[in-house]
Image (cartoon, rainbow, N blue to C red; front, top):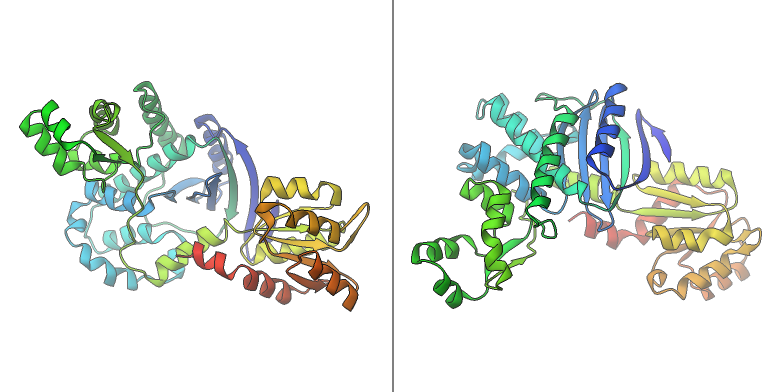
Length: 405
């Protein structure tokens, strides 16, 4: 899929096994054309990562399950003086305009601190490089991902430009060490917590037990502990593995920590990433002109889009892609919207999915029948941009609000 508006263009494709080799191939192709913009990676668990590029080289990366933990962890590792003044971040964020936040708020703070001489360039570079390597490590473990390339010619940078091949190599070495240690079935974003303190105390020295009780509180992930203990991630994880295997310590899932403040900037970032690149709109219509018009409207509104012109293949495609809203043509060769809508409503996944019937006939009988088979709304063709966007926003208001938190 490719669309363009105001100098911003989008392309999206499925990549299976997004290995280091695949990553190098992608970034090298963008480097050759001096690409500026974003690469948005989405996995099957609906996690979203974003790479920001300027002239083919990486500026920053964010996203995943613990973006704020990652940011704070890297500040603790490379900019400890800023952690000591964490209460200042609220006022600092309010000085950053929305336009300056074309790259994430974490990046803009690094730029601000460098301009104000609160950190050294080497510190900013270390935070950025470590962040990118961690994001690459997480993405490489995904079985398959959707990759969306969003061109943005207005993107610029004040900080370092990272060569993709270098960070991919470092990420690959870390992943290899993780796999060779036979801990690849565990996520470094899990947090260890003591489950059998009495038995653990018997099997360790008093000093070791005291250290473990201070560290393993179920609030800090393996990655957090690595920074806190100033030891590499694999060593820290392997040192805890015997206790995990004995059932004395358990690795549990934890949520990300909140951003410093719920600023408009943080909300804007959340909206841009979560809404634009998670919400998928489908259009089932045998008319190429209608599909093209809908694609332009939907993608310009910031949503993902998929279409199918063959009604007989529609349900298979919808089951595969699982869109959040469906525009469905009423009259198509070999099938009709009533039949497809009725079949979709019998499937548990689509029982509550908004389905908008498209038709060139605005008859009361058609409207009544459409309601009877479970349609959410009815829309006349040719479609009107304002009405399409209004309908999407109305039908998906709850979902968009959930993603924007």
